[in-house]
Length: 149
Image 1: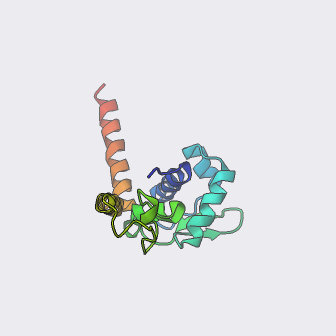
Image 2: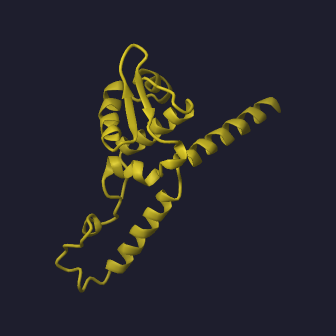
């Protein structure tokens, strides 16, 4: 399993919007300036995030995108899955059912299932709010380190 650039950028974009405050409408141009992600690439990502029900758009000169829910209500795993699809480490675990011809006697299936569970449990234990809190903590540490120099 490897998270694509699109998946990483989607998480950064969602976090960027969350950092601007609840209900804030953020333009792709503003996100681009802070995150160094082209507006054209963001448009592809935003379409998927909007389709997943994570973002809503606001039209007009001061338009942009905003979170539909509170940051604490978004699991990192659901954001990644909206962009990446399954996070399964092997193809046979991609869907609800294992259609692999070898699944009844596969000697490594239990290992792959265990890894799949660990990956999903890990990404689902964090919310956008957790990442937001981590950002604030890191910023506070940088500020205090800067003052002590």
